[in-house]
Length: 247
Image 1 (cartoon, helix red, strand yellow):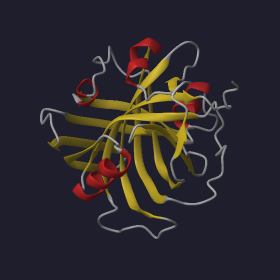
Image 2 (tube, helix red, strand yellow):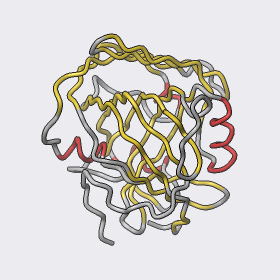
Image 3 (cartoon, helix red, strand yellow):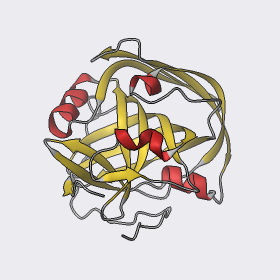
Image 4 (spheres, helix red, strand yellow):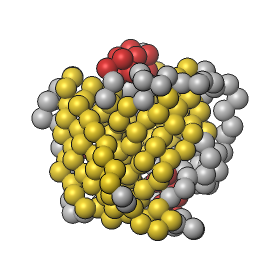
């Protein structure tokens, strides 16, 4: 099996749009972990994607803007909300690199219900806020439903200089052109496409998080190995495709 290259450009054009959305004001926090730590948490037919022998746990806060079906224009109110997700990195039998979401906190109940019902994605309805003051962004989240209601997050980052040439690690953590999930007895791959990420260095100012451990992952040890920021990109998702249960 040949694994696709990590590239800053979309590797598989989405021929038929299934969902449109924009991601704004993203903070990417990542911790390196051993592949065997996350392997039991991935869908059948996928395995941990690694770089230099390790994989990563990601904690990403952002604002979803104008989520909507097909080619848009997206929904201005119901499709616009804060989101914070915990994600892992995977590769499937076709060599496609993707992300696996362990949890997705969202401010709007309707998108939570739709995502749970259609793709069994682990969306959670939460009370959330994203506040931006100058070059500092603060993200907060408190779980409403389903539990545990003790799952919370508060983090703040200061945005630094633009990154002209991302490192291999920065590329690996952000250049992801699909997601893997398990729904209705099948493992699925959903491709996505968007422009090259505009990335910035960032400094973590505050972090108080229990979202990661609420997903069954161990608590991170020490500060993140990578902290990045992006003002965002427009995104198109294609429809789901079944993948074999053996990677």
